[in-house]
Image (cartoon, rainbow, N blue to C red; front, side, top):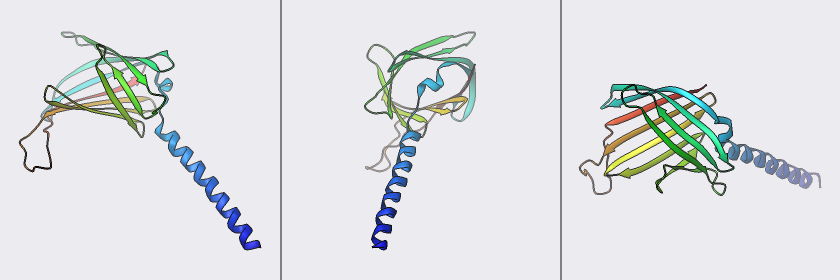
Length: 173
């Protein structure tokens, strides 16, 4: 009888411990954008074919609009070519690892969260774009690469070159 009771207790403890571990794993995949509200400042570095060709100061604003939408605005503070990208970040309550950057005019870029890093890839005008936003406590790190389709070397694989990379490290202001 004692052996049976020990097996039941062991199974219950195992299931309890497994439940705790799974809840931590699920929590680690979530991202609370509220933790990143505010003004962020940093430097955007622009590389072409592995060589730094430009840099510009940037400001990035994350501000809650409602339960599922945030201002996602970036000002590129170039003295000669300033640019503002005023987008919205849309949360998806049904899929906590899926976000959408709404650029306006029905242009939506889907972002997928893995381990506090949002990933996106898409093709526009024959150019493959990949981007990430990594959330690291007091930093947001943005990276974007672009490239074009290379000549096929094998029927099962399409390769893209990467000719451009942008990297921005933002710190909370």
